[in-house]
Image (cartoon, rainbow, N blue to C red; front, side):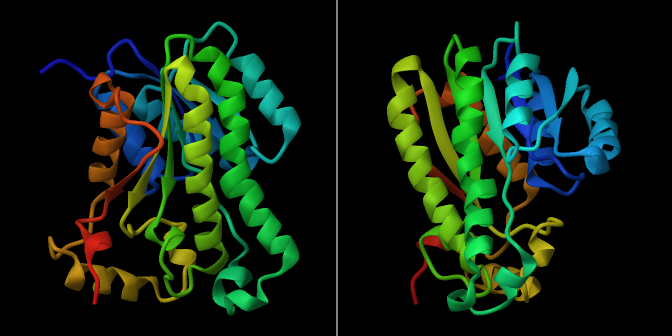
Length: 254
């Protein structure tokens, strides 16, 4: 079977450690022959991402804090001469206190921060990447069921994910004429470092395993494989959509 991403260059933002979904996606892209570029947020994460990048055979590691316009400008400059075919946006953040207290007590600054990092960054990254996607391609982000349903303790992040899904649709509409597809993957709960910041996360895993049609949770590798589909020519007719990879949990009612 031919490698599905052979000859394609993918920019992946958001790898923080080997348990992150971004890393699972990068592994899948490497397996399918993609030329990989990675970003890291700051000096604290540089060594970790460099080590992971080496294991992935990444061509370059670029510093980029998506909340800093100067970093985004530098990212654009770093991409000069590159022809991108896929961009993976795996970036989200909310203050721990805004996830642990009642949603009605969300701070103004915390609300703005969650949306700046988790939502606006997709807009800014798309703006930087699109000029380098001269042959079209795919922009992929990560969302969660909490965007459309209330999930205990997900709070402001659920609202941010709802905004992220709307952003996917608007970007898909505008970039479609350039043959750039924009989609989101709604993964079921996975034991990532970020997920551990959600109160009672182990309970969420247990409930999904008990209620999902497949009676199990999903694996990072399964999310990576769907990201391959969306970035490859197999997904060339899909845009503005949310693809669920959650063992079917999202279809269940009472």
